[in-house]
Length: 535
Image (cartoon, rainbow, N blue to C red; front, top):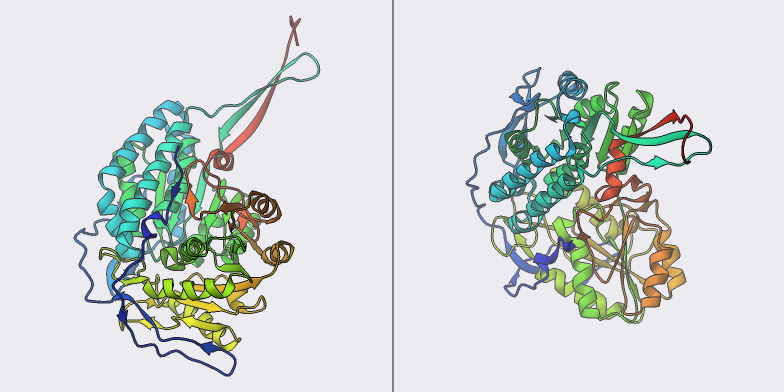
């Protein structure tokens, strides 16, 4: 099974560079070293050709309005204009969805089907995803702002692969026979946990949808899933296809809405047996608290990160620059595992900074529906302003702004690819998860120093190491307190590779065999043996 690097499409350089006036802010502490130029294409946006047909809640296999009748707008990040008005679910709608899921689990056929029968439905769903790949990718780009090439050629095929992977697991989930002292037959049963509540983020909407529903459905559970309010469209479209594939009513319910209302109601619901959440660490803490205060449901959390990318003195600088660029800027920098602390050995630091600046200045930014675009807009005005605040903080705290630092265009939420050098550990841009196209480059002297600094974070999601020395790679792999270490690569994901973090980056793992444990209960069954021939 070949692993897939999700950033592989964007490893080329773009030669069409146009000058763009840079009006950066400076202070007595920070330093601005250049004017900004990039391959920019902020033009009249391309009109998507796919209609938006699904904007209601999906409850018990049917699209329905919110109980309140309320809707909210989902916006095009390229312009800030309204794409569609989507049903706004709240606590009453969560109750309806949980009731449907509970009935489907307690009385319906899904957990009572053989694993093989469930796998056939999931495989038909994967075929439909493949058939509608381009329409789904169009909705994903329109709602999220990510490049269409990324969505159509990498992410949606990965969604399909995830579903097929878990379809393959559905008929291979079983317990064990356990030897025990004395005349007893002991077996374990692996049973579906029940109704799973799932809350997904806006940065990879459908990919996170597949990471959540794949293992839950393979194990025989039913689901209530809340989409991110910024990106509800692709999950509603895909869920319709799952029902076309033969999913029984009530097995998957999708509620669009906001965190303080629909999300909180789902996390605290007494009839939800399991909760899985992907999002910020702050919200993850709140979700965990609500789960504990209600029925102590088990919780899986995939949260934030501030991942170190360590470039050793023996590195090929050109290759390291390209890989570090992709590790940070991929998906507009809106990745929980982004390599957002770039540690570079002092011997090659100056060369690395100059080449990283040049690479950022070549980055193709513009309408994500246009071919060759590497970077689209940020998700919304709130995230845009948050990133700009961090950029100002970097300048004010004394980091050197090598390039970028401002918005692009007059419409939408585009930000110049931004590079800071001379970054210190106590600066906010080195500590906080920015979630945007802002690269912070730090200098180090030796391995023991960089390990200590890399681990000195409340996060522990991922790390990258770039070196030609296997001993160095092995030393860092074991020393870094993170859930994933990429050696001479980055953003390599596969359905079988587990993903999750240490410390405040979450608890539990998603993908691979490990994620099945999130959705199963283990029951021990003990039976006396009368006159056994052997024990």
